[in-house]
Image 1: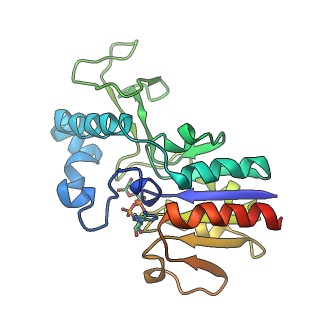
Image 2 (image 1 turned 60 degrees about the vertical axis):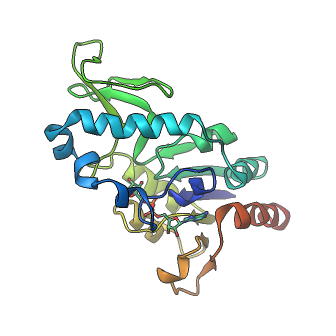
Length: 228
Ligand code: APR
């Protein structure tokens, strides 16, 4: 059986990373156009790098939570694919092995001019003047607003194959990622876990769990593993 998991910032909230659109979220503190768009980068690359340096350094000080850990356990029984909008590495650190990062990864940077030149930098800072092997500036390996999401078609194919789809901790406000739910087949069982979920879906084909991920995901994983 194939279990596909679509995660958003909410799954990492209990690890201590802020979400984007909740009250007190990152987009209240920062202007998204300034720090997370290509135009913002052109206007002030130093500010953009500082924003992601801060995210990266914060990430080094937090740990996966009970929800990440439970999802990794699913692999003992199912063919599991995690599709995450998150740029953190908490699914990896919890032990999940098949992860698609739709919006990029904080622990990687790439060449501004040669996008195929991608480097792992761990939790280190980058700054203006840090160059790729061909002498071009490095930028965060992040999909910014207004940029294409290169892995979206691949992710849609994965969702189509799902027998069970778990959607955890995402406001489903940002496309194209939010549209992935529509690729689930009619026989696919969908679970939506988010404290604010009922604000978005009233569909009876979906099991809605209006709960924090750390509370709801571990028992759900246990139930799925016992039932199937
Ligand atoms: N457990 C589960 N869900 C939670 C928790 C929690 N403990 N805390 C908050 N949430 C939920 C909120 O209710 C909200 O629906 O997480 C969701 C976070 O939504 P957003 O902040 O919009 O994050 P996300 O959906 O991941 O955003 C998508 O937007 O800015 C971009 O590129 C960024 O990948 C990100 C994309």
